[in-house]
Length: 287
Ligand code: GLN
Image 1 (spheres, helix red, strand yellow):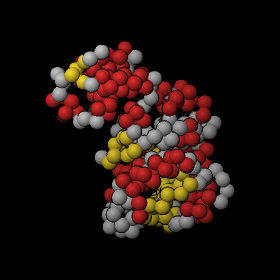
Image 2: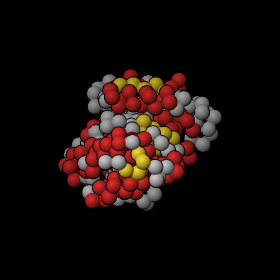
Image 3: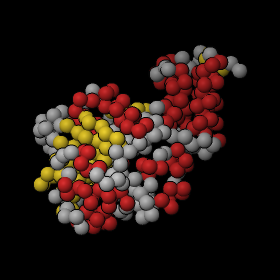
Image 4: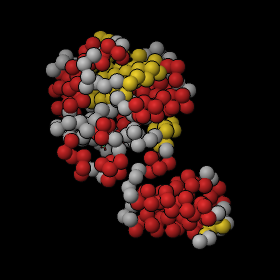
């Protein structure tokens, strides 16, 4: 079944469209680029050339994965966050634009880019929060805690690729187990986290990309979605310097409850940070 690059692109886009997906031309182009190793520009230039049969077969395989609703980021193995390339695997949550709100808030609060800030990230995943902050704050040092070994491996790969491995101490550990606080050290100037915050019973009803493919460990916040915040709140007073900050990602509508949890362990609430959709996405607390 010989076809041109443009022909393959049209077929892939039609298959994605028939499966009810959006942005099908764009996704088909990215899949074809992935299948060929060529850039989007090279593919446009070669549109009328015949593609090797193996390329057609590879593209159909990638397209079939997408039709099953596997996230593009897992198929491509990479996702951009704050303009930086992050490797991803199904062991980590796909970095989302909403989480860039944490970065925006942190850079506003830690305005002096040359200070040796100490930053803690609980639940590293790909490392997108901590590693982006270490890129932006060139004298800062960070500690990250991650419960999943394959996720930690992804974060370590990203730290090395971004050239900040020497300033990032990335540890395996579980905040649900007693004694975890002693392992991460501190105290820190800033604690960031995008903890699991979906109500356990709501996960099955999320988009199939999320419910079927993303790690439950990174999503499941227990019955009311707030279990991780309670665990963090119990230890956070001893992790933060006086005047230090907590910036925690929150699900829609959760901010008031999260503020209550942290106020009960001695924190003071500051104004929340909104994401691009106008939702209170990041709660800010000081100690
Ligand atoms: N932002 C993710 C979602 O809404 C959830 C991430 C999380 O639980 N931290 O799908």
